[in-house]
Image 1 (cartoon, rainbow, N blue to C red):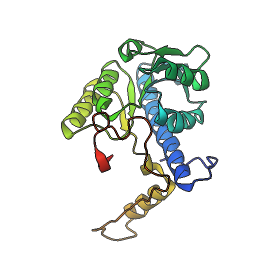
Image 2 (image 1 turned 30 degrees about the horizontal axis):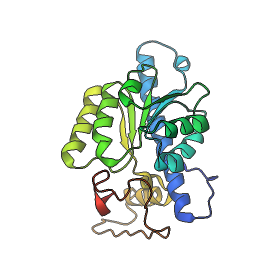
Image 3 (image 1 turned 45 degrees about the horizontal axis):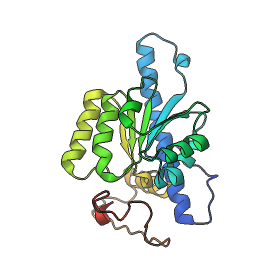
Image 4 (image 1 turned 90 degrees about the vertical axis):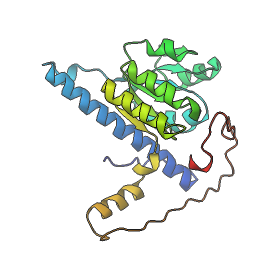
Length: 231
């Protein structure tokens, strides 16, 4: 696992941890994709350096994209270019493309049209929970690696369908559990793996949110989000 971004400073410590975790999550995922693609290139007898910078696309350009993912991806500008933005509200996609995309970044309102592009490497799915399964499977089947926001799906059946699509397509799928990439989480994981705590038979964790109830967008819309406290 790679080190965290030390320069992500905000006034709110919990926000800073979330932001840094998201950046690290994106960073580790991209390195995994790069490693596998390089192996594929070597197997074909081609030069590793011949492979261009990754070209990424977003499905969903709302709050979570603009407040978390896009600022984190901006830190990885030497690894990925954002060339396509899709949202049901075209103005949101246009705004995100203007602020974070390449000069020729394309805007879509239909994800199917965007996924028909053959020049996309990675797709970020940042939409309401009920759409994660459908969009993830479509992106994987179109030959793209996928980074999907949490929660993974509405139920275990959908989650298994997503995993099966990843296996069948041979593409990479990861879910946005960014707290796993926080420095404290990785430190504790290392301590446990080294056996420094002996046999761990009980663990307790809690989180306190001081920023109020999240009321933006469709966060409290049960039909759109589903999951309640489990998300």
